[in-house]
Length: 377
Image (cartoon, rainbow, N blue to C red; front, side, top):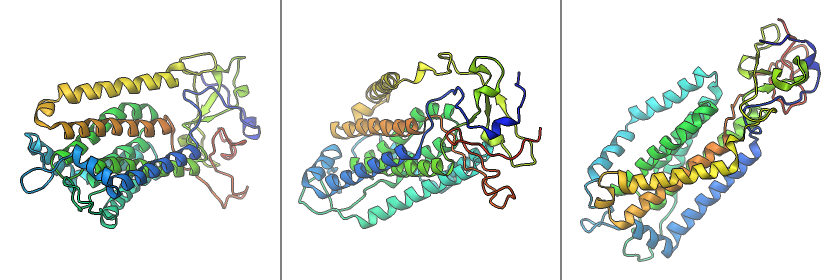
């Protein structure tokens, strides 16, 4: 049952009520993750493009074919790889995927988040195209290397950015289910670019790092605009009846309206766990174990379950495919962990409100006050 709605809680500081999730996601860690990803991107570029050892390693992982001097591998998987690239490179499919991001945002009343996700994808693709034109690949007389620059891969950048755009707009519970299948889809695109000879291993790594960097920056901007990336406003447990905090009231920010309109709320019991609502399901050791199991399953699937991969691909490209898949899963999983179950909501403000510029502003439990206008129940 819903507790009685008092009018006094708006005028008192908030004490966080029991929550179903971990601490709110703040912009600081996301900015640090973005800077770390950009640093890794710069190091990858410097090593694989501008050092003889890096160009030699790229050539070892993806050797040039004998015919024509290109990188297309002599494998039965070249045909399927080109089919995958042609399908994913279709403007119609890309438009449908970007439209799906917008529709998902509209369905959850997160239009600003959806537009940010679409903008992130377009910026990632544009940045990859500019980088391939600006960056130069010196000629170190490496037999297995050419001076043609293809760093980073536009296909891999677009695939990773699209996956992370859906991560932004989807609710927290759906992100975990999307992470592994989505990372596998990105890995298929990355593997196809290498088998077809379109990109080297370093190009796929650069594409993933570029998309993750822009995702962290976009998530940090949304968290900053929303005060905190938090799915709900936790109301003072003292406003609910009973000695235990089970009656604490949580107000969904998507339902908090301006003054003069109804403010909807709901009572939320704590999640499975201790009596304060903390669940031990998402502890750090469990996450590490889950990540290790996922990586082992992926390696087994690539080497055993995928028909013809280990038999039709040489050892160098096979190592490159397995490594690119593992790094992609690690990067995407890290990005999903950073946002966890955060719900990015941009506050609705009414600066011309007669009671002041903060009237009508929706803030989170980290803010000492919540000012959503006088209650009108």
